[in-house]
Amino acid sequence: VNRAPAAVWALVSAFEPRMLLDWQFVADFFQHEIARDWAIEKRREIIDECFKQMSNEKAAEASVDCIRYLIRPILKHALEVEKVEDSTLILSDGTLAFILQQIAGSFKAEWADELSIEMLALAKLLLKNIPERLISNTGELLRFGWTHGVQGRGLNPKLVRAALDHVAQFTAVFGGPPQFLQQFLKRVLSLVTPEYRYQISGTLDVFLPALPYQSPSRSASSAPWWIKQLKGFLVAEEYSDDHVVHVMRSLVNHPWIFSV
Image (cartoon, rainbow, N blue to C red; front, side, top):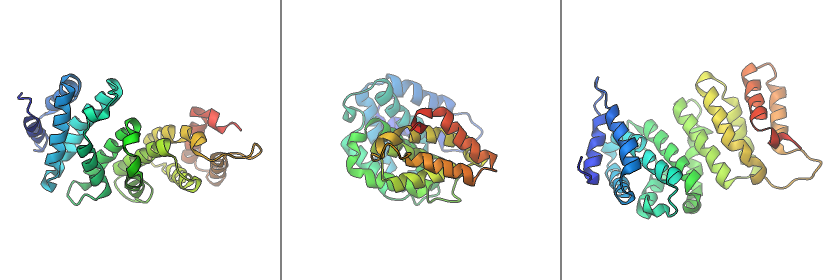
């Protein structure tokens, strides 16, 4: 394969035709060879080229596959495995600005939900690894996840789950006022249907441990607000096994944040 970034983008089109063909070998090539073995300069060029191509609204479907199979694996390996100290070596300022611009806007295409899911997962990855480069865009990042996750009733469950994961990661990094955190916890605990149940456990595992560090100081005689909220939730939903399991799983997984 020619290692020119444009040639790599052309390979993304292999995923577009919805035919009875197995293109897994292309995904494996992206995730295992390009993401891990190619020079960091070349990987950065590929990311730049892909987002340049994504500026075309007609490329919405290809953008979904590109973020899922190529861009996120490249960034995840560079930031979490290689632990690149200077993140601009893998993600240029210009490309990061384009990503944040896309997040601040809206996707008006047939693939809007799928593209939003991939952008939410990408934003979560960036929040986890390079929050210092996102400080000036916290409002857009929070609004993007909040709109789909907390206010998005009746939407695509995959989109809601991705948005809640994104908001949980945001609060773990940047925190938030108690009223905001309480509303988010209430929303997460209310999702007990099968399509949410197991995913929400992971969301709580990111959200809950950060609360003692993100909440304002309190008097020694006063229980933290999340203990009061979970107690009230248990009383209100005591006859719902699914709701009770949500709370009990949180108590078992994070007992230290519930000790006064």
